[in-house]
Image: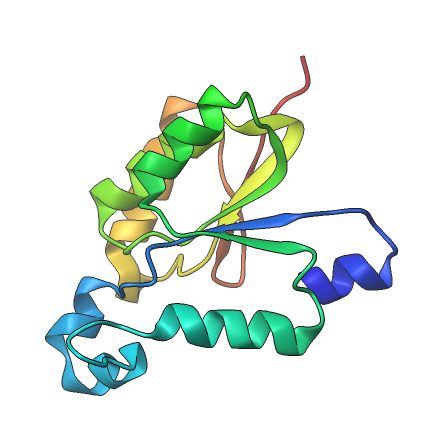
Length: 155
């Protein structure tokens, strides 16, 4: 996303909200646990993320916010921040995805979009959350490939 925005000569900041502690599947599965890069009992994937950001040449445009999604959404609301685009990538459990969708919808600027991926049978929690959210906001999600998207109406 950052590379594309730069190529279009846009002024932008991508705020990345994550704990960088991994998801339950990372901790439950030895294969995925390796991705955490655990040292002294603590994941190091945050530092891998930072290395990738710096290597991409986008460090001035990407701002990590190492908080839970709930804490971050409350803080961003306090700042009255609004975004044109919000990407949701929760832990894929229905309640977590739905909660993030509700919390972050309040941060989407009128005319902006909220989207995510993994809208597939393998991730039933995502599908359930997207359908429930769609019913709440009286919208049918736009689905393309395994991505879902909601557009906020203009005021």
